[in-house]
Length: 263
Image (cartoon, rainbow, N blue to C red):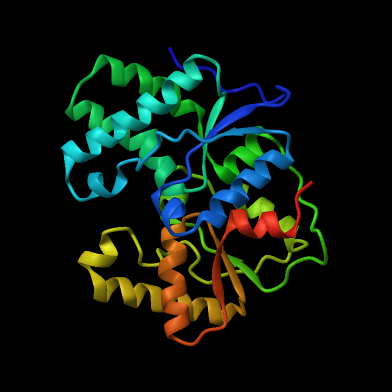
């Protein structure tokens, strides 16, 4: 039986925040911005200290037993919280981690069958949301710029968010409001930035060339900021942009919205 989605009209929902490894270690401001956005909408945020990695790097590297252990920890941490009514949803400020949790865990469970993991995954997969998806689809937020509308902002749709989760309209809707419907048209927007997790390590030359092409397109459209939903893509793009002397910078959508307005 598919667990029901949380009631959109439910007052003061409580969510479990899964921040992702890279946010936890390198970009804590993204995690704080995510919490700020949720709290501003009357959401109570719970941060389970037992959370670790979702297992995506190990999974992508073919380290199946390591990814299994991490998936088990995630499920053992968050599934009981939903089952016991402590939280209604899990919110993730990362399209790639959300895709891993919602979709790739099924492949791990298929490889290592477990009735308990199957039950836990059925509990969490329909109650796990990428941040922009939760803000738009569940909370129905309306953006009001805190000052003047932002200018010269582009949006790079990160691959897992766009291709795996099929989420594109939600972050664009938020950004269009911030820019007074003047979000820049980034050429080849749906082309990968070249990060791809381990891809950027195993295929450095190709990864760099893809990043340079993305940087060139950002310059061509006049972007000073490019919003992204994944901190890995943000890291890769900023490395390229800084090295090439571009003034444009990549910023996580959580920070951009938290710093510039949300009703």
